[in-house]
Amino acid sequence: MISRYTRPEMGRIWSEENRFQKWLDVELAAAETLAEAGIVPRGAAQKLRERARIDVKRINEIEAKVRHDVIAFTMAVQETVGDTEAGRWLHYGLTSNDVVDTAQALLIREGSHLIEKKIEALGEVLERRAWEFKDTPEIGRTHGIHAEPITFGLKIANWYAENRRDLARFQVAAQQMAVGKISGAVGTCTHLGPEIEEKICQRLGLATAPITSQVIERDRHAQYLSTLAVVAASLERICTEIRHLQRTEVREVEEPFGGEQRGSSAMPHKRNPVSSEQICGLARVVRGNATAAFENIALWHERDISHSSVERIILPDSTTLVDYMLHKTTEIVANMKVFPERMQRNLNATLGLVFSGQLLQDLVEHGAPREDAYKWVQIHAMAAWESETSFRDRVAGDANVRKFMDEKALAHTFDLHRQLRAVDAIFRRVFGSRTPEA
Image (cartoon, rainbow, N blue to C red; front, side, top):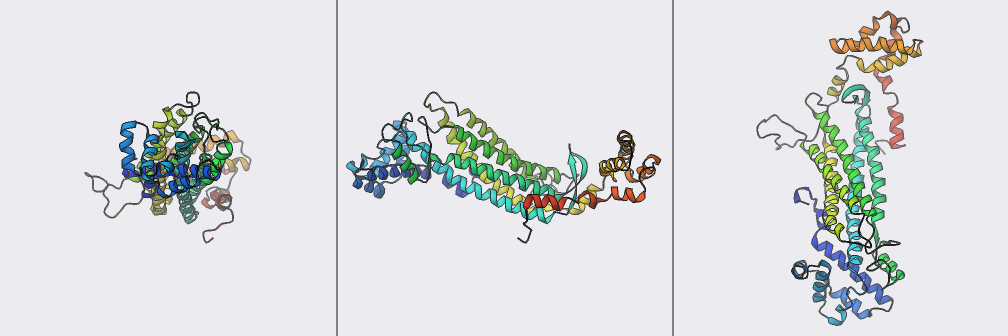
């Protein structure tokens, strides 16, 4: 992933140095477990632990000649051990993917810890801002058209609820990836046996895949990548909404704009939602990577290498992008400007049209035939829309409507507080007994 979208902690996780170190961690765990079982001399395992080191430059030099990264790795590590007797026990009984797949699980576990923390951090910001605007009226929109009143807090609480589902989904997917395998070239545990495999994985803090081919099956990876894509899509949903609400004609919300920031090289007045647009664009990349992960599930027989080159890109890039996107979206939501007065103005812009649904329901409740009531309300709604006149005044002057509803009943119909009376109950369903102070 390019440095522009790489946060330092995630960048370190996917560095060559850390990747080879995880390979070495697997090798040392195997040697020490085998030493405990009396298969590898204890002195050899101890020397490997004390002396074995990673030299990225040397590994790359050897790989340029042998064209096999794991062989280059083992050769370079043996050089650092400086003891032929101890060095010969490095990689004993293992095949390349025993090391690579198990180490990959360790890398993904590290990356997943960062992502999980950032999902949690976004949730905290969403919860805080939802309570902040719980009672701030805003027009709800369907198909981009004014529908019925909501509050801006409800909108954010909706994002928060999705964030909680993202967290639960991600925890499951990350757990599915936290497995190792030391089962050999075709998954038969021929050389070391199932018990040794389990002990090595346990030493590394991983579960053991119950059955594998030469590789851990890639449905796990597809689930993980698709979950990252869902997380990215949730962030895209938030940022798409902010982009719409920042439009000049709407201007209910504005993403943060720095003091030295400039929006356009040609138009000094511009304050564009560039960060939100960036998130929406990057979500497409993560979705594309998830598609590649699905393509990796079907490999030839007990394994081919077609998945390997793909994963060298999609695993680091997707975790790096989602880590960046979560950080960026959290900043946007935490610092976005909100304009309640503009929300109120937009809510009133259609001069009461947004209460048409409530009027229909109230007419029926007061005894009007539904089809007749629908026609009366629609006629006045369309006329008010086209002439930009008061919908309430029009229906108040209609004898058909007044036959069933007096002025007091109409006032109840057009009461904004009535429309929003369930907000507290919805917040209790989303946040439970928690309050902003809690």
